[in-house]
Image (cartoon, rainbow, N blue to C red):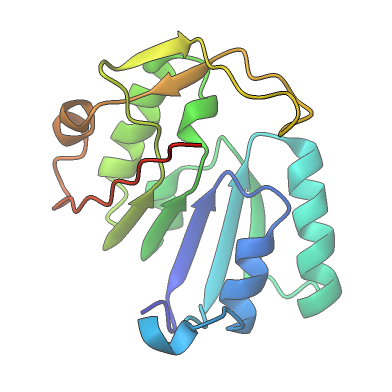
Length: 171
């Protein structure tokens, strides 16, 4: 349950998860318990994404800093002290494995009770793996992605008991 928790999301896009967490409006939320977070911290490297998220959340919740904060990527997760850290489809955009190592070290020591990561799993941890996507499905061409292995994550997230959900798509 996210009820009453401080959620930190790394890689916030347009802030839609923040809207859901602060308003408790997720479809089928009852199946997973109450999802009304006490506080949402959205962290992103992109100024454009931060502004978009700030605008969206402010339009719905005012500028109530007790409910949410939009922060840049230099934010220290340990000092932020979130209950839950979420990072969805962000790690594959990391510029290098060294960056991934530094980030995972920070996450490992932030004392969050839960961590939810969405990663691209590869046969080896690497950066700049060539990816190929059908141009008719996406207007952007993806030239590289950082992929990680289960062992790579296990070695770096020693403060967490990891549970895995793996999905494979044939499309």
